Image (cartoon, rainbow, N blue to C red; front, side, top):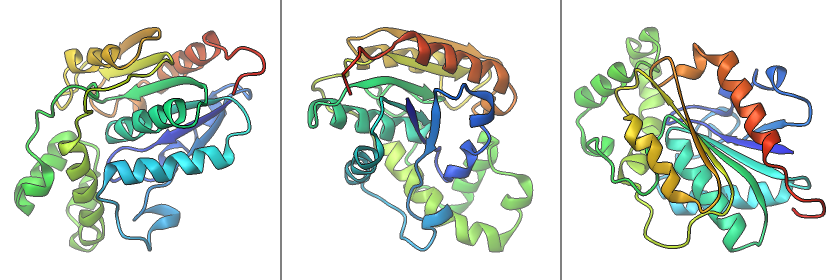
Length: 237
């Protein structure tokens, strides 16, 4: 099975680089790189979430000769959800599982003010409060000049995202949240149950919005168990 992973706002595919070592060989981690970072740093950051989801869907289809699962971290959860919808509804593909990390349910309205409408000082304060950006990076004008366009584009898509009422997923969803996450409430994490007619399980682990860094072993163990529990019937893809 191939696990396609979508990073959080401003993140690159490299945040998933060391996950494979702690997952069974039957689960192949395949990070998806977004425009404006990593190997795609020369590209302009995306600002249209549906169009980006269309692109990622084509990437998954081109590389998915085995059963597919999707994982999205924070902003990436909305993209992973939209890709899963496209695979199931437009392409008739079986999605083994959707894993969401530190994200409000797709049908929940956003609570935070749109990042694209905050001035630079407010936006930097927001980044500081979330705790995911190293202090050395926040203090470096040169680095922030490079990162801000990507971060603003990602936060803009995330802050404005809301799934329009329509068909939901058939695949299982496992949702994760951090017990100390001040950006995403636990009830918002539980709202992912509204996004599938399949099985739903939620796990709250110790830590903040970036709890996979501090509760890594438990986090990856739960993912491994969840993905192996819901197997695709023989012959389905």
